[in-house]
Length: 318
Image (tube, rainbow, N blue to C red; front, side, top):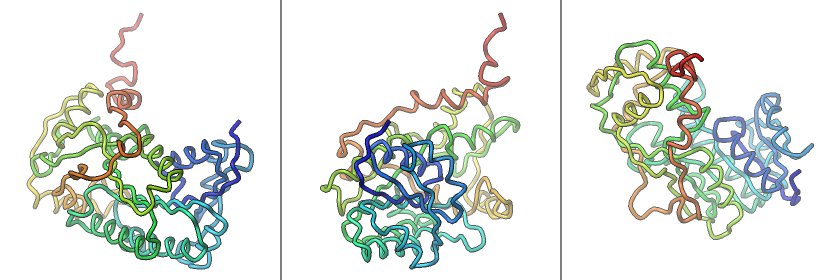
């Protein structure tokens, strides 16, 4: 059983891949947690991550300032990890990554919240994509309204439920070849989802982190081509890689954007023109007293299911 410290936290985006790990990390610290969401029943599964009554799904209308204030009222800590990978309808990058963080930060200031942690994205300062620009604008909007906010910039995040390695592993199941956008030279520094959650837990409890930006990257820097190689090694599925020029990739992304869950969009292609790595001199996991978890310690645990014949497909029958 966890010992409660009677401090209250509110997490926006708590039902997502990263958010649910953050909720668990805060629960381990003894916080009672409001999971602010437009659909509370979708957060019910999180209640088992803490003691009875410790984690509470809380209705919040993101576009309503009064509703945002009600969500953060009485909280010591507020976390925003809401994000989207592509635009659909009213869910635009500007609305989700810039306007909403601004509104949450403003609500936190008005309700005199002590600590506000905002999740952004690695490389957003250099990116020319709509996604990257909206993330950077979101950071500035947050700091304009809550100057002592801590901003975390994770790179590509990996873990059992990720939308990176899992997506490419699914893509590799049937086709004989896979696209290598721009020749596959884009660099990534993947970070484990558990490390992101622990970084936030440290930042919450350390007042010295207030007003600072931390760039969260793992222990390895890999090109897109090397990412594929690592994926093939883990799944036992080797595929031909076909270099896709930027222009053609963007055209394909525009067509894919018409799908309900596009595997690639034109803006994501633009994002690939900027490396997603920790900048020289940036504050990192090390500054938070954390060592990055290696991909070799995690990837086999969930990519094995994509092997031919399944997880144990390479084992001989007794």
